[in-house]
Image (cartoon, rainbow, N blue to C red; front, side, top):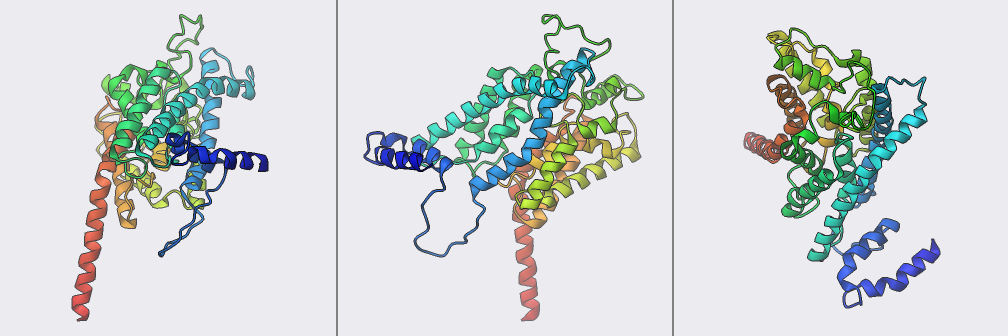
Length: 401
């Protein structure tokens, strides 16, 4: 490492202002700070010093994402082989994981290449340091995608999320909406067939006949949410959950779905890491769950269609509810900042998610729309919470006077 440090010190003057490659100063600084802790310190003024900087925060979030990502890779192989009639007794865990790894890796590479490329470009144009914010977004975007989403669509959606969702607002820390969810929303409305239907959730299912795959009779690749939405649209009296999946399967994640969203267990491990390290807000997570249960319970009491009859706690296990609660709703930039505001913000996300799922089968994955809507409402929530605190303090001051 000393040799690398010496080499960086040797070439660094070329990337400083007035140097031969001075226009690439932001790019050099980004690579240098990735390898070594910056040696810059505050020289004057009063500052709050904390060991948890942005880079460490991003690192913790990525570590928390790993259980869901690794399980998602395994599940991709498992679902693919299950469609062919093969079980774990026929195909090893490692073979399932390796199949999924090869499917997911290109999506991750494309998301990071496009997103970081745009981040570096804007940093150079603005003569600013490259922020680490996309390190997490670049991982979140692949994890909320179907495995069969075309790579060029992933690239276009990532570019849209970074340019429109972040850079137009001033970059990391200035964005109103969660960039990863913006990428998903862009695909959902611009290329709906790439992120909806039954065929996109299982690798190879979309082009099964062309690939010569002999699928198990009756296998559809449907997610629990799509089964429920189909039952509502068809006016069915009950929901026929595909392939006999149970809440236990939903909890472990052995169901079709987005790459990193299926396993509630893996997501809970990530939630523990975020809460233990203080990076994720437990208030938002808990209030979102409460909101979902309350809204689901109200619909259970009304019970006029099959979606309303779904037990409230089912909503916590299916779709992207768990993943959105832990990794999307808790985004410190786009979420509410006040403690009371976090309770309100999370509760309304849970309510709106279940409300959207039950009342509009055209948008069965209500978590995306619920979080994006509440991203826009978060500043308003914080404003009224602060104003309420000010009024109460003024009232106490008058009483004491």
